Image (cartoon, rainbow, N blue to C red; front, top):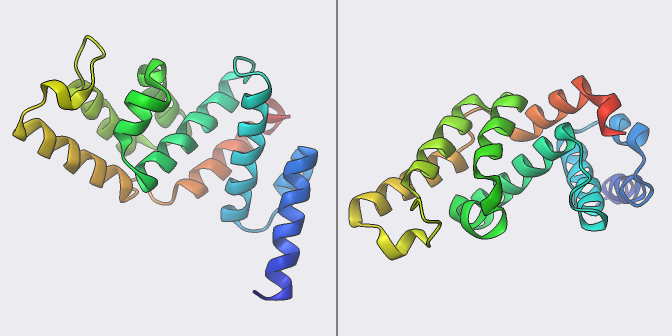
Amino acid sequence: MTDQIKYEMQKRDKIVNDEDIEGLFSLKYNSDFSIALYEILVKRHDKTPNLLNPKQLNLFLCMHLENAGQADSILSFLQEWFPEQKQQIIKSLNEIGAIKSAKIIKQAIELLPKNNRWFFENSDEYSERLMEKLDSEFSNYPDSAMRDLYRKYAEEHKSELL
Protein backbone atom coordinates (compact mmCIF):
# COMPACT_ATOMS: atom_id res chain seq x y z
CA MET A 1 0.00 0.00 0.00
CA THR A 2 1.44 3.34 -1.04
CA ASP A 3 1.73 6.32 1.27
CA GLN A 4 -0.81 8.16 -0.88
CA ILE A 5 -3.40 5.39 -0.44
CA LYS A 6 -2.76 5.31 3.31
CA TYR A 7 -3.21 9.07 3.46
CA GLU A 8 -6.49 8.92 1.50
CA MET A 9 -7.82 6.15 3.78
CA GLN A 10 -6.88 8.09 6.92
CA LYS A 11 -8.51 11.21 5.51
CA ARG A 12 -11.67 9.24 4.70
CA ASP A 13 -11.72 7.66 8.17
CA LYS A 14 -11.44 11.08 9.82
CA ILE A 15 -14.31 12.40 7.69
CA VAL A 16 -16.46 9.46 8.80
CA ASN A 17 -15.52 9.75 12.48
CA ASP A 18 -16.27 13.48 12.48
CA GLU A 19 -19.30 13.14 10.17
CA ASP A 20 -17.68 15.96 8.23
CA ILE A 21 -20.04 16.57 5.31
CA GLU A 22 -17.90 19.37 3.85
CA GLY A 23 -14.88 17.06 3.99
CA LEU A 24 -16.95 14.31 2.41
CA PHE A 25 -17.65 16.46 -0.62
CA SER A 26 -13.98 17.32 -0.91
CA LEU A 27 -13.05 13.70 -1.59
CA LYS A 28 -11.73 13.34 -5.11
CA TYR A 29 -12.80 9.81 -5.99
CA ASN A 30 -16.42 8.70 -6.10
CA SER A 31 -15.45 5.34 -4.60
CA ASP A 32 -13.99 7.06 -1.51
CA PHE A 33 -16.98 9.38 -1.38
CA SER A 34 -19.44 6.47 -1.50
CA ILE A 35 -17.61 4.47 1.16
CA ALA A 36 -17.46 7.45 3.51
CA LEU A 37 -21.07 8.47 2.87
CA TYR A 38 -22.25 4.91 3.48
CA GLU A 39 -20.34 4.71 6.76
CA ILE A 40 -21.72 8.08 7.92
CA LEU A 41 -25.29 7.04 7.10
CA VAL A 42 -24.87 3.68 8.85
CA LYS A 43 -23.47 5.47 11.89
CA ARG A 44 -26.46 7.84 11.96
CA HIS A 45 -28.93 4.99 11.44
CA ASP A 46 -27.35 2.94 14.22
CA LYS A 47 -27.67 5.88 16.63
CA THR A 48 -31.29 6.71 15.77
CA PRO A 49 -32.79 4.34 13.18
CA ASN A 50 -35.90 6.35 12.35
CA LEU A 51 -34.31 9.77 12.08
CA LEU A 52 -32.76 9.61 8.62
CA ASN A 53 -34.46 12.18 6.42
CA PRO A 54 -35.92 11.05 3.06
CA LYS A 55 -32.79 11.92 1.04
CA GLN A 56 -30.51 10.16 3.54
CA LEU A 57 -32.85 7.15 3.59
CA ASN A 58 -32.79 6.90 -0.21
CA LEU A 59 -29.01 6.67 -0.22
CA PHE A 60 -28.89 4.40 2.85
CA LEU A 61 -31.30 1.87 1.32
CA CYS A 62 -29.73 1.93 -2.14
CA MET A 63 -26.27 1.39 -0.69
CA HIS A 64 -27.46 -1.52 1.43
CA LEU A 65 -29.21 -3.08 -1.56
CA GLU A 66 -26.05 -2.72 -3.63
CA ASN A 67 -24.06 -4.40 -0.85
CA ALA A 68 -26.57 -7.24 -0.65
CA GLY A 69 -26.46 -7.72 -4.41
CA GLN A 70 -22.68 -7.87 -4.42
CA ALA A 71 -22.05 -9.85 -1.23
CA ASP A 72 -25.00 -12.22 -1.19
CA SER A 73 -28.24 -11.61 -3.07
CA ILE A 74 -30.99 -9.07 -3.39
CA LEU A 75 -33.16 -11.50 -1.44
CA SER A 76 -31.02 -10.80 1.63
CA PHE A 77 -32.06 -7.16 1.47
CA LEU A 78 -35.69 -7.80 0.51
CA GLN A 79 -36.42 -10.53 3.01
CA GLU A 80 -33.86 -10.32 5.80
CA TRP A 81 -32.29 -6.88 6.13
CA PHE A 82 -35.11 -4.47 5.26
CA PRO A 83 -38.30 -6.40 4.39
CA GLU A 84 -40.43 -3.45 5.52
CA GLN A 85 -38.74 -1.24 2.90
CA LYS A 86 -39.63 -3.23 -0.23
CA GLN A 87 -41.74 -0.50 -1.80
CA GLN A 88 -39.49 2.31 -0.58
CA ILE A 89 -36.43 0.80 -2.26
CA ILE A 90 -38.13 1.04 -5.65
CA LYS A 91 -38.84 4.72 -5.01
CA SER A 92 -35.30 5.27 -3.69
CA LEU A 93 -33.67 3.70 -6.74
CA ASN A 94 -35.80 5.83 -9.06
CA GLU A 95 -35.02 8.92 -6.99
CA ILE A 96 -31.24 8.50 -7.33
CA GLY A 97 -31.55 7.80 -11.07
CA ALA A 98 -31.17 4.01 -11.03
CA ILE A 99 -34.24 3.46 -13.20
CA LYS A 100 -33.20 0.10 -14.66
CA SER A 101 -32.29 -1.21 -11.21
CA ALA A 102 -35.68 -0.10 -9.89
CA LYS A 103 -37.44 -2.12 -12.61
CA ILE A 104 -35.37 -5.20 -11.77
CA ILE A 105 -36.09 -4.92 -8.05
CA LYS A 106 -39.80 -4.36 -8.74
CA GLN A 107 -39.86 -7.63 -10.69
CA ALA A 108 -38.04 -9.40 -7.87
CA ILE A 109 -40.54 -8.08 -5.31
CA GLU A 110 -43.40 -9.33 -7.47
CA LEU A 111 -41.95 -12.84 -7.15
CA LEU A 112 -42.00 -12.71 -3.35
CA PRO A 113 -44.86 -14.36 -1.47
CA LYS A 114 -47.59 -11.86 -0.55
CA ASN A 115 -47.79 -13.32 2.97
CA ASN A 116 -44.14 -12.32 3.64
CA ARG A 117 -43.07 -15.94 3.92
CA TRP A 118 -39.60 -16.97 2.82
CA PHE A 119 -39.26 -17.02 -0.99
CA PHE A 120 -37.89 -20.56 -1.16
CA GLU A 121 -40.78 -22.05 0.83
CA ASN A 122 -43.22 -21.57 -2.06
CA SER A 123 -41.02 -21.03 -5.10
CA ASP A 124 -40.81 -23.33 -8.06
CA GLU A 125 -37.91 -23.93 -10.43
CA TYR A 126 -39.06 -21.22 -12.83
CA SER A 127 -39.38 -18.50 -10.16
CA GLU A 128 -36.02 -19.47 -8.64
CA ARG A 129 -34.31 -19.18 -12.01
CA LEU A 130 -36.01 -15.86 -12.65
CA MET A 131 -34.94 -14.54 -9.22
CA GLU A 132 -31.38 -15.66 -9.92
CA LYS A 133 -31.49 -13.87 -13.29
CA LEU A 134 -32.82 -10.65 -11.69
CA ASP A 135 -30.17 -10.86 -8.99
CA SER A 136 -27.47 -11.20 -11.63
CA GLU A 137 -28.88 -8.33 -13.72
CA PHE A 138 -28.95 -6.05 -10.69
CA SER A 139 -25.42 -7.02 -9.66
CA ASN A 140 -24.12 -6.12 -13.12
CA TYR A 141 -24.94 -2.42 -12.56
CA PRO A 142 -27.50 -1.78 -15.31
CA ASP A 143 -27.51 1.96 -14.57
CA SER A 144 -23.69 2.29 -14.56
CA ALA A 145 -21.58 2.58 -11.44
CA MET A 146 -23.78 3.23 -8.43
CA ARG A 147 -21.04 5.29 -6.77
CA ASP A 148 -21.45 7.86 -9.56
CA LEU A 149 -25.22 7.99 -9.01
CA TYR A 150 -24.72 8.35 -5.25
CA ARG A 151 -22.33 11.25 -5.74
CA LYS A 152 -24.59 13.04 -8.20
CA TYR A 153 -27.67 12.59 -5.99
CA ALA A 154 -25.78 13.66 -2.87
CA GLU A 155 -24.45 16.78 -4.59
CA GLU A 156 -27.97 17.69 -5.74
CA HIS A 157 -29.25 17.32 -2.15
CA LYS A 158 -26.17 18.38 -0.19
CA SER A 159 -28.07 20.64 2.20
CA GLU A 160 -30.34 17.74 3.18
CA LEU A 161 -27.42 15.47 4.00
CA LEU A 162 -25.97 17.78 6.66
